[in-house]
Image (tube, rainbow, N blue to C red; front, side, top):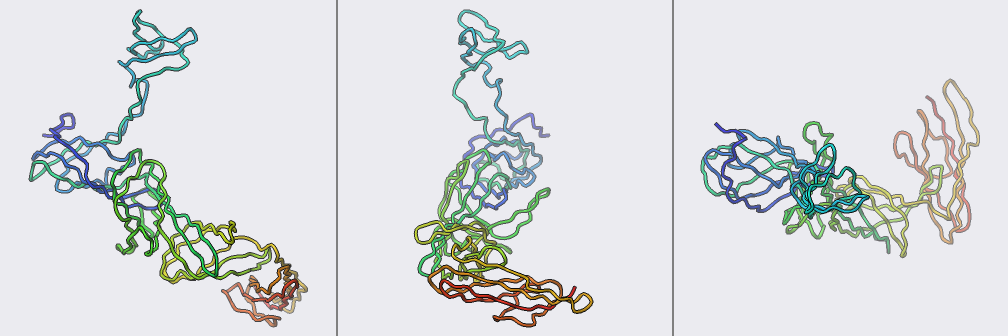
Length: 405
């Protein structure tokens, strides 16, 4: 009968290749190879796991797990200094000796002159801090083929996440975009020589998790290899990487695509933005910071953009363009039936001709009776006019709409 109190012979345990599959909300799939010595039946004490390991997901290749008991990392305390030489600074002076006991009355320090009870102290100095170690697990197992083996471990762990951030340069009608992955390691341990994969798609997380929203990276990224996995996209970083605790930035997406500048008025400031098609590049959701003519011109967030998607990015308000929106009249022409006349005046202080897109939101069931410029229907409640404005002038758009609730 196997019990956790008796540990079998572990022999040599070495760490081999580690693979990390990262999602954007803090959960990762970890696969690693370790060299262990196995008996037909025994108990293994293993260490070096992330502190956020979901132990119920642990799978050990070629080994039947009979029972499992995780041992969380022990938090540091004064108890770790028992039996070690320390220096204690008090108001009366400093005492150097071996810490023998921590009692309710104070610290018991054995010095060369004898035992000192330190009731209050300002600070103490001890030996070099040694990390308390990563999470451990004790496994009761059964193995059909004992001996020294390379054993594969697979499990889910929390504390690994990533997101993307973009810098873009707009020049000559092109938008050059560089996307950088910000990888965050909060697992309490460093990973060495790891293969790293990023998964794209909406992935449901483990029980009691709100789910994982994964990000995608462009196939033309210079340091990744893209492919499909199940209903998602996977992007494998070339080579192996050291992933220490904290944040690491990796350049992943690089694309140059045609883009056009546009102006849009919806009742407030005249917005300025860029419009483009993603072509053969997949852009995950994230913030894009845009630069032009040597200066930063604005930033905004984009949603997930697949290949061939038309997209627009509003980065700020145009300085030399203004607009006003005035209701000229309202007539009630029947039960719940109204006729409104609106006038939108656009003014330009620019030295070139521009076009401003005017977006109007209409209430209820509506139809436009007349308009001074052509329009197109955007959706059930919005229409778009394109209004040209000559240099240093103003242009008025007037339309009449009939609507009912």
